[in-house]
Amino acid sequence: MVLELFTSQGCSSCPPADRLLGSLSEMKNVIALSFHVDYWNRLGWTDPFSASAYSRRQISYASALHSDVYTPQLIVNGEKEMIGSDSNKIMHSIEKAFSQDPVAALTIQSVHNDNGKATIHFSISGPVGTAAANIAIVEGQATTSIGAGENNGRTVTDYNIVRSFETTDKITSGDNTASIALPSSGMKNLSVVVYLQQKNNSIIAAARQDL
Image 1 (tube, one colour):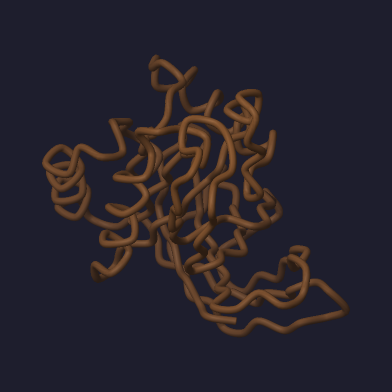
Image 2 (spheres, one colour):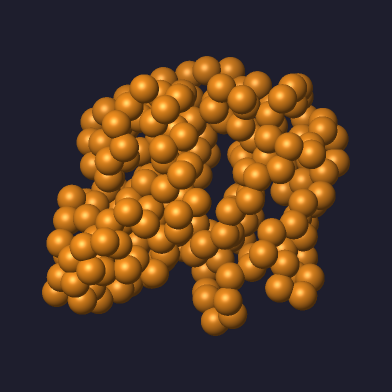
């Protein structure tokens, strides 16, 4: 089960969703990811975690799900979108997703740091079909004092922040190897997440391992 929150430090309605994501990440078998978009940066505060690639990912979801692009927006298992602070709707969607039989299973066997890159060995059981593997390096928590924009003067805490992200379709049932650039040194509480996503955006398997 993967939750993807599209958020921004420049958005005044995002901190409640950020806190909720932190709580949801403590649930068993839930992997929560926070993608910081960059289109709020125009208001004067450049979100240090933002990337245009994450904005494009959100736009792609909006097109597939016939939804608007907004923050905070939560995507549940690639299939449902909702306001990221709507706890009742989110929990209902999580429970519904858990009621479905798993399509495949993924296990991270090992992760090695090779000259600034994480090399990940993982195994897939079950049909892969046309699925791709998304790989994320995630920072567990960070607190920032905001100096401009809608949250000017506030101190916000973000959870499960995606710091690097890659997608590869070179996967198969059985053993696989992939690599991803590690963020700059000095960061703590990092983890790697691998999740399989079909062409229709449905997420069929996921795993997480601390670095």
